[in-house]
Amino acid sequence: MKKIFAFLLSFALLTPIFFSSAAEARSTKPAANQSTQSKIPIIKTMPTDDGWLSNIDNGLELAQQQNKKIILFYALYLHGQYGMTQGYAATYYVEQAEFKNAVKDKYILVYYTQQTADQTLKSKYNIADNSQMDMLILDSSGNELAREQKAVSVQHLVDFVN
Image 1: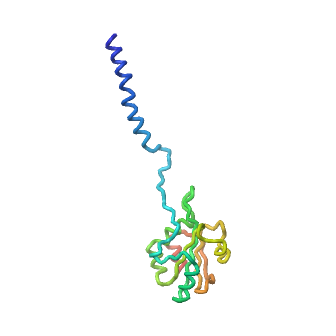
Image 2: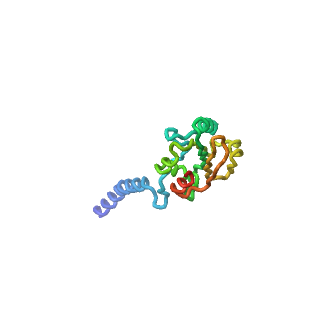
Image 3: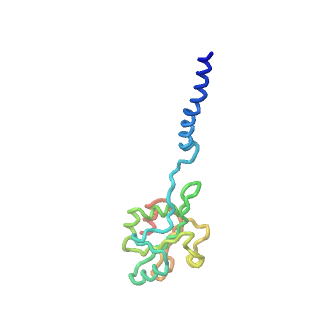
């Protein structure tokens, strides 16, 4: 009887030690049903070393000086619960070498997001408040020559700017 009592006592004392460390280890692992989707960084501005400006007035001035056209790129950069928005995908596409080569030395690049574009800019270039993406080609005076509102692929945008 003493052996059974000693066994039960030792079992009662040692069980929490073994199972608490196992429970603790399980709590640090993500649950199987938790989202393990990787976080994609939000792109608020495009790299200036790639030639992107954040002001249309500066872009127009440069376009007139260099006799170039302008690409005015407006993108809603949110990564929604159902996947990337058109604007978010486009911010990725314009950073690809294919697109960079297509616009190199041909265009002045200007980038706006829903947070940096004021209502005056949206009105002037007819950018809807719910627009996910607008890519406009402007002449050096700021007149619209062409507009694209879809970012299907890098090649799609390359074809648009060519």
